[in-house]
Image (cartoon, rainbow, N blue to C red; front, side, top):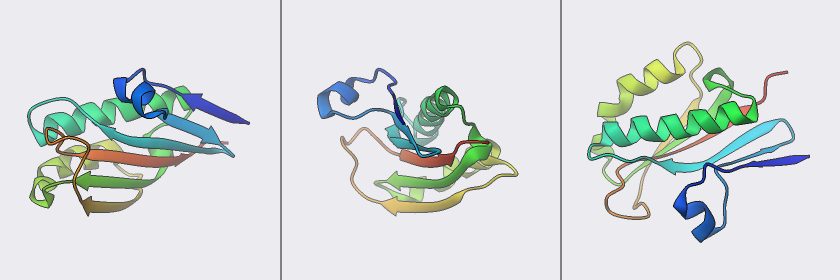
Amino acid sequence: MIKRISSGGAFEAKVGYCRAVVAGGWVHVAGTVGQGDTVTEQCADALNTIHTALQKAGADWADVVRVTYMLPDPDEFEPCWEMLEQTFGANPPAATMISCALLAPQFRIEIEVTALLPT
């Protein structure tokens, strides 16, 4: 069974995707950007959106097994480290950071996660 979770974001309808898909015991959360002026504000907002999707799927931060961070400026990643350490705590996932262009120039970080539903 496949469950689709929408966050109601404007891009979901425009682009044709949903915030998360639950399939085969896995939760796949789409790349998520946040609002705000600084990279840390955007990171916090993206994490909040991701957390809501995880909870709707029946998962939480401890269930995340993979995370990908995408930033146009890799030098802006370090200001997010403390927040990410607090988010994942004793359950850090495998992680990758990619430097790349994002959908629009105002976006400074995009985060994508995969979680395994608890049994």
